[in-house]
Image 1 (cartoon, helix red, strand yellow):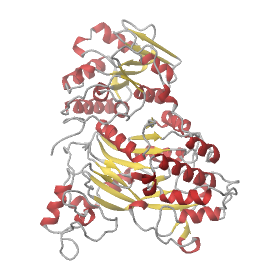
Image 2 (cartoon, rainbow, N blue to C red):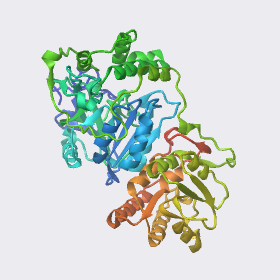
Image 3 (tube, one colour):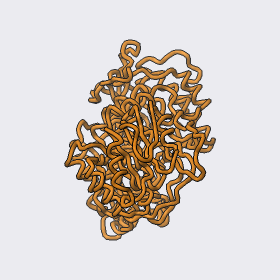
Image 4 (cartoon, rainbow, N blue to C red):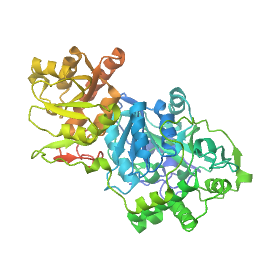
Length: 576
């Protein structure tokens, strides 16, 4: 039992993480985590969302929502790419060089997926929650990390991160089939008070001090979710990714990972501080005064202070603001609560120099937001009743940068060639019987059932490209595992084998059910062991129970834009 033997019900004293309650019993979740005895443990197990307990398909992925981070986004992605299987970067309509830098790193690093945020979403929490549903229901990851661009996991290797996240504190109490959370405390770094930004603009090299002590609160820590390959479509990321709860307002069980911190670099330069604070407050006001009053209050205070200030701050002033960032408790001054320290983040850059964008231009862009270029795509001759999905094609174009793209279609013009051309293909052509010449990449996204594809067509597909073949089968979106098995066998016999991470990333940013269920990104044989494992995992996914939702019609230009399908069975949803 909790505390003095009383059950932790509504009205209980707030714990270290605050009052965390959910319906219908309004149990204080952190208190339940510490509950001893059969009653407390039983209540805790009842509260925990369950999943099917299958072996995860991918190990670890990250979701990061970013906006105007050209000074920090390159070190962020270089640091985390070796730690993750996939990183989904949600660009919230950046108006500086952030998008360009990410796009270049997509091709170099190989496991970064750039997603343009739809204009209809104003709130980070809404869009990140939507992204989590689409991503996890395609990737079936063991763990998902929710990060901002100024947050760096304080580890250097994947093995180190594996060791620190393998056993969250709640594991002894919570059943293995529960979706659980690990909480990571910030370690906030500060600009060196003696540094000179004109001489060294790179914040990675300038931020060499940190707060000596941190008071643990939800606002000064982040969570990662341990899904174990499962999925719950009701989960909601709260504002700032500090908390995760179910649609019934249940808080998930969590435990502090004491030896895993987030290196936090929130206040990096005067330009960054000014534009972030003012632009963020403009965004909050766009969502409504009531919401603005609850969220981003610390940025409002900074915005008020900086709105009339013309002179840049000194390094010492910036460091002192970093001391109080996102806190509502006394932090002391630099002399009492700041120490020199090394964060260990590599300063390697190829596409940026560490300078932040012009604050005035970024503030003006926040006041007059524009639709992102990828969502300005329009097709002149879209067939009536057709369904086309542009974001997965955009992902492939960024990843591989093919100069020529061939599109197999037995139905005449289906529009995917135009989408590839819009996203940078120097030449895109469609073919039905035989390709005019091998392309760098072939899209075959509306194939008939494998048993209905003749030997000549299989051979034409195999010879249609020298690098990348992408296949999908609308006939199998209801869960026919035999279709996937037959397709993989045919393609392997022709020398084409799937890449697991690329295939799942393609599915994750797709909206059309048959692409999310059956799409495969294939290459000539490169790693037989990995290819055999990838084929086996794709067969496992094809065997998952699945009820395909109705396919939306028209041209889809933004990933994660439509609500996640409300179906009784779907990707990853399993009863315990």
